[in-house]
Image (cartoon, rainbow, N blue to C red; front, side, top):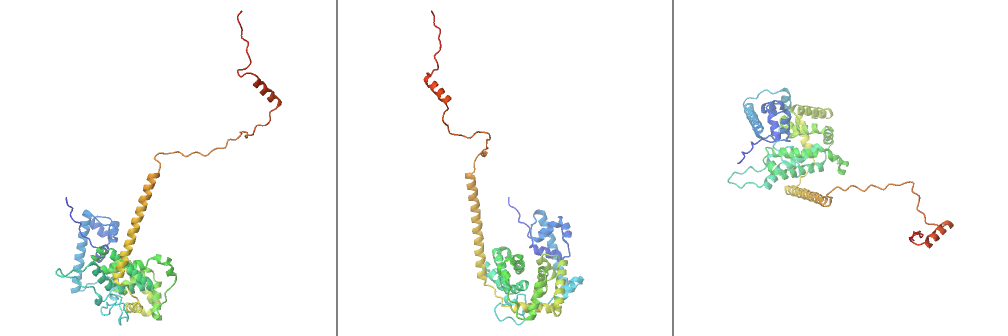
Length: 397
């Protein structure tokens, strides 16, 4: 008996984006599927995966939301529709996407810097059936060449540290190579790597590293130094939201999905971050100006990324190390368990109680000289026969 294949589902971030694009809350979608709100939240975060009839119902609802979003986009292209006040205010202030400058990490920097990948570095198109398909290594190298230079500059704006930015990007791509079958079929591989790099760069454990105690030299330009200080003063969540929306140019639902926050919370973080930047740097109150200054700040630094083969070899080496470490730990645990089973007693043996001190017993002493009475008694006993004194026995006449 063969089982039917499970209904395919989009990635967790895409599930959340489809729901928020349709204007539904988690409770409303849970009512449609027939589950609780907490269940939908775990599905969208990727902690659990639906099965059986719930999976089919959930996939059907997501397909309907995707079709609805497609119809809305088609209608919006023909006749723009009115949006909510928050959406309008944020979308109008979004910086224009610049696709002309290049993103090569080699000097000199481009004349018009940008924080987004350039079409010149785009990966090769997907080959047709008649052509030779790309190998996993070639596809990974194409993704790395397309995203790594811009991603290093973005991560530098998050942390203000050049070495940490390079390390975060390399670690994110190492994770991507370890899980390449999953990343290769993702709808947004660049977003997957960007989220991994941001999470590693903003990890609070870096503060315990000895290298973190020594600050790196700030930018030479006073205006760039002031902008970087303002960014680093922002809370990490606000800084990440500002960079994704005003720096990278993502939409509000995409930014909310990548930061794992609601659309309303993301909008509030963005507004608070803009207000904090404008309070200290009034000339950056305009979002397009802020976008241009962010790109200039990141592009002035000489941030070079490692070569793709180096990243792949480090990832494979790390995977081999942890695999061998896991095998060694398992063998040690099995050996210790076997030794314990072989040397453990088969029955219960009560422990020997400790000795107790008996009081009132006279101490042992050596024999001394005999007294006169004892000497007489000993002499008498020796003279008599061993059977005792003679007894009177009656005799018959």
